[in-house]
Amino acid sequence: MVLRPHPPVHNLQEARPPHRFLRTPAPWRGAQDNGTNDAGVCLHQPQPSRSHHVLPDEGGALRPLQAHPQPQLQNALPHRPGLLRVPTFQDILNRTEEKEPLHWSKTLRGYYYRDEWELYDLEGDRDELKNLAYNASYATIFEELKQTLLKWQRTTNDPWICAPHSVLEDSGAFKQDPQCLPLHNEM
Image (tube, rainbow, N blue to C red):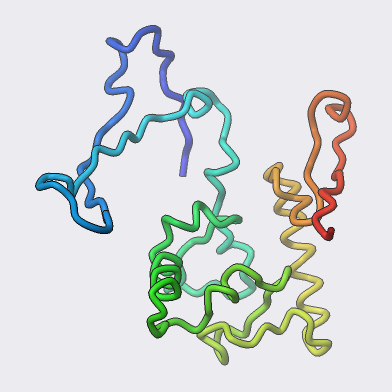
């Protein structure tokens, strides 16, 4: 994927177009007036994307990090982009709220509260139910994969390199010497 900057826009008349609207179904609950089953969704591009900057939300593929990439797997982002946009999460959330049976291997609680590290045998455990990250038999491969990920994070200037226990400070007083500062999220 190649990211090219947009030409500078000096006024809205020059934009071609500055935004687009989509008609999408709106899942309103309860009684609604006729004609309220869709909504105009503005897909306005934020200003930073008009420059050479890549927003942290744009992410990158993790497939190259797999020891044996599997073509049927989709490329993944290095973060969870807006859980509410993920259909699986929406289904889990709705079924949990309505107290309906889940057709998924993880509960809402399991979706929220995962182990910090996850490692699965994709051939023997296709549903990713048995986390091997803390299994001593897999310690060597786990450490190799962690180092590969860390190298990738450094190479791509990943702003989430310090997560989840700290945050990268690389501006102001830390511009010359970036540091991971604690979030104190263990409290």
